[in-house]
Image (tube, rainbow, N blue to C red; front, side, top):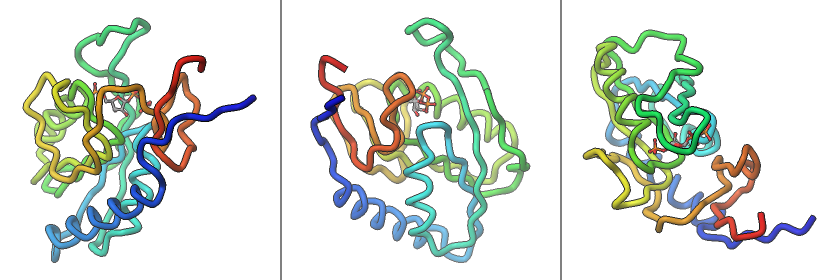
Length: 175
Ligand code: PRP
């Protein structure tokens, strides 16, 4: 089956940006320990690339949230499908996401982590669609702003597929 998505951000551009973000994060957390929370499923590739660009002591936790029920409309509060295993109390947390769309997921997560008494909570996201967020989300470390198109690859899926693509692509009609 032929599959030729339009490349929006290629692997070299991604690698260069991830390197820059890793350097900034390492500088900002110098002398401190960092706990990364990788938001599954989509965040796994960005997270694995980013942590290899850090030179501060780092622990990694995983969380999986589902923001949508069976329908296409957001069901409001995301549900925790898989929770982190460690305590966040008193820790410096960096949430790592593949994309911020409505902001629903990270808004929920930031509130949750503050309730659980994290010392600080910051956010790294590979992609952001400006103008779509319902919340005033501060992205401390952002890869790229993109237009409102359906993107796949580098962790992002369409119906569970294409996460493994090494670039960010646009899914065109017919797939
Ligand atoms: C995607 C993405 C973010 C969220 C962003 O996850 O990984 O977690 O949506 O959207 P929002 O800003 O509107 O909340 P998705 O629910 O598709 O799950 P997945 O990562 O398992 O594919």
